[in-house]
Image (cartoon, rainbow, N blue to C red; front, top):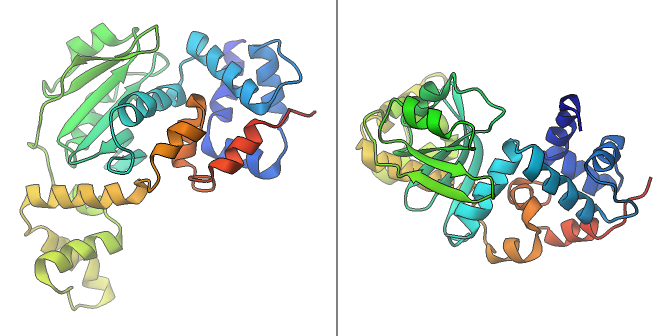
Amino acid sequence: MHNKDMSIINKIFTIPYIDKMIEDNSTPQSFYKCIRRCSKMANVTYGTAIKEIYRYMNIKYRNEYFFKNTILNGLLINKHDLCDTAALSELPICESKADFVMINGQGIVYEIKTDLDSLVRLNHQIRDYYKVFSYVYVVVGSKYIDKIKDNLELQSVGIYELTKSGRLVQRKKAYCNREYLTYETMFQLLRKSEFESILLKHYKKLPEVNNFLYYRECQKWIGKVNIITLQKEVMECLKKRTLLKEGDELEEKVPYELRFYAYFSKKYKLNYEAIDEFLHKKMEE
């Protein structure tokens, strides 16, 4: 597969693309094109085709989806109870987006730098994440592992390497860093119902001002809560957004390659039967 065709893989392994394939019960030409280039297999199920493309990714093209799916399987599913630990993806924080966030008692950000990425903004991204979270890891492939070790400005940042064999290995432990926590950034991350629940917990009431002043007044009240206490309550709010009620079934009913998709798809989250039915269907042109 030529480099110009790698964009097809990036397109396929997105939630909207897979949602549409399942919903429409049809296969885009781009999917056929991809499976023909990645494998010589024909007359196979969608599940087999996806496994083949994913296998090709592992060897030739470890993109962001591959990293995220590996983190979800290796650090969330394998080490935590999915009914007690939640994950978020692409969480906007200031001028950055956290690639993968895991929340149990504490929140941990995993910033992914694949071999296809640039490291130019990394230190800026890390500082943004520390405005809300106390633990940050950078997850890299073998290409950047030495450069990351040398160039990280903040010593509290941890490092995971996705090795050539596909294992996630902790190369440096992350340490707690609360130096950069800010009230404003945490408040901006919260939905209206979330910051109102925090205010009611602390003040037993909400500001009685007009709509124009309400948001600003709520932020002012939030700014009087102990910042470590506030961080814990923000983590609880974020955790509730994606926490599974039937966590063990994800591992049992969804193949390894699609667990990130199944966890974050709004249309098919917990609808494992629909996913399984799709994967067992034969591709038809």
